[in-house]
Length: 442
Ligand SMILES: [Fe+2]
Ligand SMILES: [Fe+2]
Ligand SMILES: [Fe+2]
Ligand SMILES: [Fe+2]
Image (cartoon, helix red, strand yellow):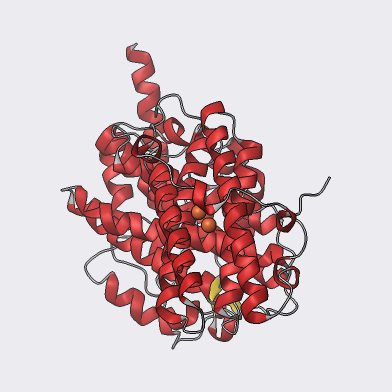
């Protein structure tokens, strides 16, 4: 049975304001929460931040609407604000910044992998696969600090659902931002699925950027501070990359419809998938609210654009965020595309060997890592504590770590403190030898 959100009335706007007790909500227990409940909570915070921010942009930039409708937009913006609080504040006070960070990167990996496999547009899929390998490496870099600073193993957060191992090295994610710009879709021929997919991942990446911006300074360790600064800047590139896929000729009315539709689709999926009863009920309430927003957006669309909302969002729900383990898919992309790089005009180089000498990103990479690359130092920190880097992955991937590093590292603009493949190999051997020695002691 298909579900057509445009046929649903949803909750009336007059009934959507909740009391402070409901708005502030109740946190989950970080030791008991299912990792994909946490990823839903993190993603839906990002979705609401985007929904709230968009209402403000709307009222700042749209001239042609009467006062009554402008008031309705501002009332909806307030509701997005209250949903954002409830979503974000499910996160408990004892979940450290690093633990939450691992959650953010798990969202990025497993969401982007899902989207890539369910994306009808081949070009957009390629962009998703490209971003996927970068967030996959961020997860690995942060995992080094989570273990060395706080004794947190990756499985404490990702619960074995997501592999944590080296990807395309973070030091090579820094580009001339102009190169991040991809080709945008054509709004008149692109499916609602593609539009919702892009807005979903964009909202997640934007909030990841904001989270690092607001929390990266909270650790005194300068290597960790610098790593947050480094990865935050990559998230800025991700925002640039994903937003550039959107047709800039979309009107603000089309965008309003797409924003509410994206919220509907995401809450619908959350409600279907949620395993925790209390939170499932809350997703259901939010879905009802968003159906109410969508009704309003669609009436305004008819009034001001004099067009049928179905032209933009179709007549059925789309699924943008099924959180599932994506290990096999990620490994496949990793082995195939770890050496891929960005080319101009929205193209890709299949491998760094094809890059011309004057590639605009070399200058950026050389400048930012002229002292050192923090994302490389994190492996060196882990070596002190653990003889080698912190990894948790299935055997077929674990055995290939140095090969992946070897293929992922460029030849030019490599930071002087880079852990080279032979050095990593040596760390792994040392670790194994010492583990054997420890066993004999017991
Ligand atoms: Fe919302
Ligand atoms: Fe990331
Ligand atoms: Fe990202
Ligand atoms: Fe909404």
